[in-house]
Length: 303
Image: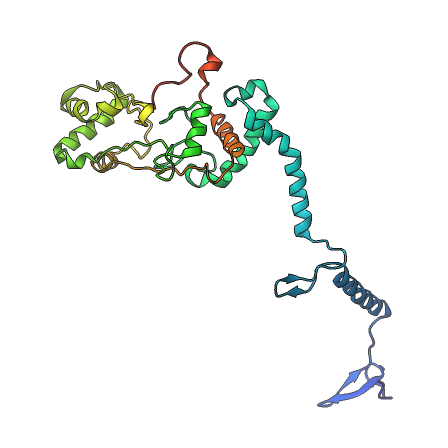
């Protein structure tokens, strides 16, 4: 709308609108800008028609093309899963102990899949690098409470430790000796246990007598533990809860009771086997006797 007047300073025609003595100049937008704006309007209308756009109570408009980013991602995931079907099926039938040598490609797939499963399900306790923490075992060394062969690892993952929901779980319990021993006796026993990694005779002195009477039935007369019942080796300077006197006093007096959940009800069998393959190759996994021939497995000392 033109007011038929021109601004004295700029010489621009005015619109006729005036507020508090300020007159509005008639400066129309550039043609190119207007056409660009109109094009975006047309593009927006076309997008609304073709693609999901308007939210509804129980979803959204689907658009005439029926395309969505969610559907595209689902299709990609489906394609990857289809491509991996043969590998997952092969993993179910494979001999885990011989997998590395018999089928290196399948072993590589299992390790890579197991790494992803570990980060999702295990790293919260054992750490992103599997180095463990206080009360959570380090999976990088060769100190295993229940055995480090790949099938033993798979059993632990599948059924857990002290997992009362699974009848096949591995179960052992160290009693709290605070109910049986006096304070001075526990103090002597703590000092003795702390000295075991330094080479002290497990049967020496008062602490040795206390150890023989109360601890040797599980940890062995030589204090090297018993994997069959999850009793740790006390001579190797590897401590699950710590080696300071205060911690050992608490452990001996009250008894630890660590629980690992069983993953058999959360992961399928192929995933469990992939996870076992990953943990086994981290650095502490032990070779099966079938791979070594006659004789004990590598690193077979109790831990």
